[in-house]
Amino acid sequence: MVTLDGARVTLREHVVGDLAAVLTYSSDRSVARYVPWEANTEAVARAFLEDAISTAAQQPRTSYVLAIIDRSTGTLIGAARIGLESEVHRRADIGYVLRRDLWGSGLATEVARLLIDFGFDNLGLYRIWATTHPDNPASSRVLEKIGMSYEGRIRGHMFVKGSWRDSLSYAILEPEWRANRH
Ligand SMILES: CC(C)(COP(=O)(O)OP(=O)(O)OC[C@H]1O[C@@H](n2cnc3c(N)ncnc32)[C@H](O)[C@@H]1OP(=O)(O)O)[C@@H](O)C(=O)NCCC(=O)NCCS
Image 1 (cartoon, rainbow, N blue to C red):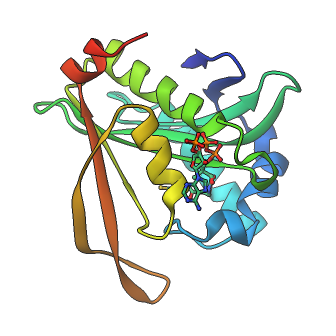
Image 2 (image 1 turned 180 degrees about the vertical axis):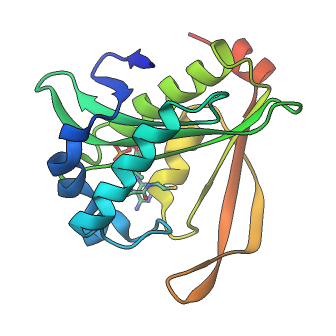
């Protein structure tokens, strides 16, 4: 079971009792705007939670879908994910989502740093990457702030909400992370 502590947030495994808090952020349409999923119904939020809990028990584990906890209140405020794509190539991708009223205070940057520190330190990864919606500069900025480099535009990357969309691609390699570690 994974727990990652930052200054203001903790990332921990999901539990069944998280449903109401998961529904609070994931049912917000502004939160779902640039992600591949629609604003959640209760049934969808429950399925997300069940999936997060069941993948935590898989061996070998390839997906870490963690709850973001605001340390000052103990409240669940979002989700963070790191998914292993290849054991041979030691590569993973990350993602994150935060409750709307908490945007703009650096929390996602702290979350993303915890994910890449975990990936390089504990999972032995060499490359961690992420993609953003081209109209979501806040997410691109988070990736730049944690030291990722922009690698280009992936055209027609996903069929989402009825149309094809491009993605912007960012990545950081283990030696770059190590060189800038503070
Ligand atoms: C993307 C998201 C996680 C960012 O969370 P956050 O806690 O607000 O992020 P941070 O405060 O750590 O950093 C945001 C940065 O983007 C910048 N930013 C915000 N809106 C911006 C905009 N429209 N244009 C340019 N920069 C913008 C902020 O100024 C900040 O940069 P700075 O520290 O240099 O000033 C949050 O908006 C979210 O949950 N969105 C919905 C889900 C989502 O899109 N997830 C990402 C999927 S790829």
